[in-house]
Length: 404
Image 1: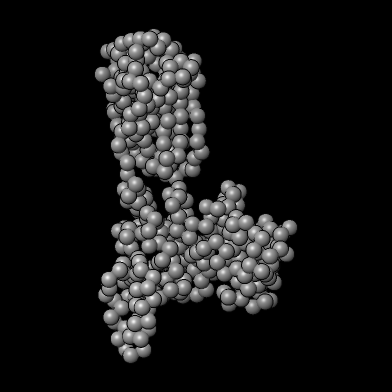
Image 2 (image 1 turned 90 degrees about the vertical axis):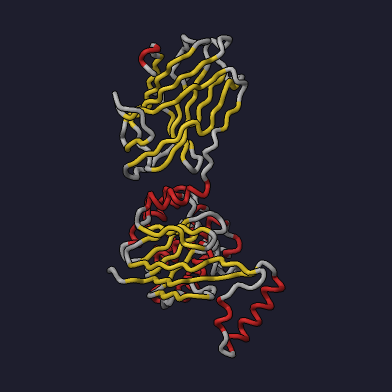
């Protein structure tokens, strides 16, 4: 079960930005191949660029490769090369066994045929006989949840319905290689959960390449990760957190943005993991996290509200805490205040998080100050999965000598 099913060696593919030049270059390339001068295709000509540039990797049965990178990195082009839809200009690709692919919504569907008829067409393309497809037909329809619409033309399907049918066909045909390009983002949350369970069961006997911009999905499914940037491979390995961190470097925005009336000032913010621990920016899974603030709030605001939000690198709010929810009343307005907020046990996924902090007037009619990315910290440990949560926390106003 450890045999190599996908092997890419120094694969490159170029395109031309100008349509007329592209057509002319295409004619010259065909003519060059006919007379044995195809090697000239390996050099860039005016207006051309490398969409995929010298990428190599191999994938065995039982492995799932997460292919990630910013938009325009070459991920979809590489998938099309692997699926045989386009030909590389340099390098070689070896694929073994049956290949199932979900590269574009509705790709391979005949719009005027019904869902049932398209199941047979797609199965035949994958090399299955009519008898083999008949054995899986009811299971495919049930998985897609399209029983009521299976006799309707696919052109009447929504994008989500096409994804359901396409994934149901690909997963039930027991492919040796399965290529998935971001299409699961369209389905509803219930169907996505079903797809992930199906992929988990397929990985045991399949080589899967999974393209997505959702890093929690990469952490959950993938055994290896390939990071692409401008067509080049910039990271390849089985250290998933390291690969994800590399991906996030393309979107880093650590600028601390401050807005508001300026009637409140945050002098410092520090994190302490576990009771009596030292200040740190590295938190372990299930640590007890306490935030220490030094703040000065204008004396005109007798009962302001402090709100803390913890945000992922994908800008998802995963934890928030507010003093008003806890009926906390300030007793040090107009002077330097020392505030301790114990958020309790942290069960966040491994990764980098930032803290957004807002201080408003009592009825939130005025923003006294709002800090974006006031503090960054890293969580280490295992993947646990999470949903946004609002917590009360334990708020304390400390004497000056207790916090420095």
